[in-house]
Length: 155
Image (tube, rainbow, N blue to C red; front, side, top):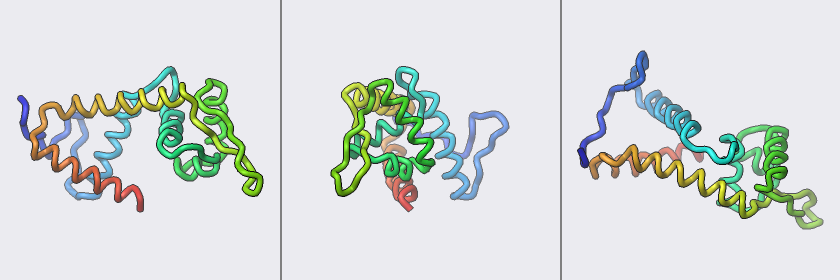
């Protein structure tokens, strides 16, 4: 029924109870949401890591492998492997950096931008569907919580 309050304090996952302590509850919620996101969103056989990298390039523009590795929290070797797959698939190209800085950056292509946007759209559609029956109060609570989670992620 539209406008219903979201049930609080229960889990529909057998054998998993939600923790009472706030930090544990937030960690559990973020972990479950992330896990679900990875199963919901996909594009043309690309995995979560590749799509996340494309999303970053779509949002901020060309990035070096080092910048992408720091953002993703992985090793440069991991980013390099992902970048090679994206290069082979035509989702990114290499762009030279000015001589005084050396190196190169990855730049998203049209097909890479389409893949990233499709991934974003899938995630938004999943969340919109999950919130279809949420009350205005729950939507506002979630909006505030989302801003707080972004602030936590930036620490």
